[in-house]
Length: 224
Image (tube, rainbow, N blue to C red):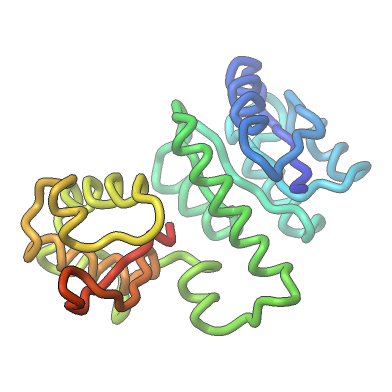
């Protein structure tokens, strides 16, 4: 069980996050703090695995608390949930080592995705059965990025990519290009470019299977 606290001065947002967290198996909400100072006291007196942390709060702000957590409470991870959207705040949080950065207002789907990804990363890091290979580090623990450099390669449109990802996230089990072509309304030739990109960035797995009349076909599964 991932023991979690929420540090958020807005009671409506805190209640929303608490309600969302209760719907996700594997997490327990131990405490909610309205001030960063109260959150710091909880960290000093309780075992905390995960802090859901706001940035803008009276008194000590979330960035200052994040710095303290990263310097003193190495067993605790942080996911920012905040209205702060400027590049400076985001880059600062990433440099300090947040597990994710969720911008308000947020949906349950976005919240759930972040929690499940954190849960999987934590499982891989803590499981004695999982060998910590370079592939796991590159594809599952650190930020996923294309081979050979950052950013999207030429020919990968952001809006189309978002559509493809949205469709793939809803696919249970294995699927083929043909299956997704019908759902996404994108030609198989164009779709293949996006599948290759997602596979290279570690978000899509693939294996060989057989289609009609025993013909070989590539089957995919969504990794997240």
